[in-house]
Length: 185
Image (cartoon, rainbow, N blue to C red):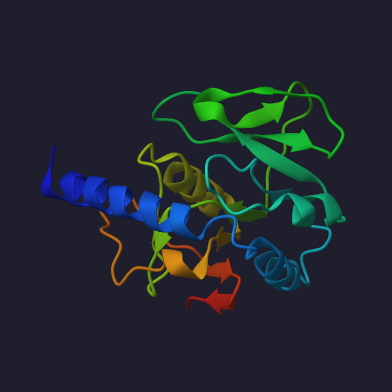
């Protein structure tokens, strides 16, 4: 392992504990309201959300209320970008890799706006994920094809002074928490 890999592994351990400590304390509703306001102007845009796992903050009410098409990420394989499958609140779901549920079937969707889960974020707009690099690869591919808005969705307590990064890490355009929306330039 490189020194950056070791730093990220240590940061993940702390970030899991921090997120778990604040999860379930009634903060999701305020964060969801801020997320809804951050999406003003993107109501018809194809949106990617996620099925929350473990102690992730819940984007489902915002996804369900979105006027445009909504997709959820599907892991195609290790070392690859994510694919996205069309999701509706009543679609049949199956277990996907890493415990996240995915639509049993449905067309592929290419999102213009992504709600991105994370373990930690910093004031520069970097996020700490689970270590598979899926969102970093995905954002690189999507951004090469055109403009994409990537919004981290987290609890305010998940902010850290500095997220360890390497050359492959993609910055978020903003982070939404129960405290509001923070945009990065």
